[in-house]
Image 1 (cartoon, rainbow, N blue to C red):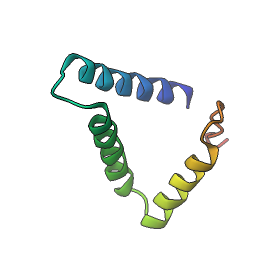
Image 2: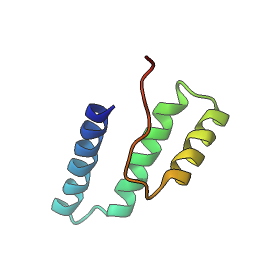
Image 3: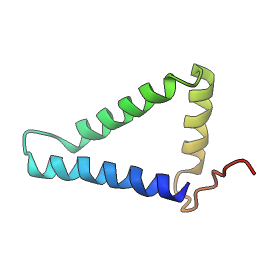
Length: 73
């Protein structure tokens, strides 16, 4: 998923750069908007329990540099 992560990081960086160029926006509000949109998208294909599990997994992995998500073989 390295390609997917690179695209996601670029999209987020672009959104945060927009905040820098528009002083009427705030970084915190943009980060929350991105988070809310992602959760909404994930909610379309995941149950509440699955979303909680994803969030707990990500929080537990916070600070680790390696992405361990793999595709089925």
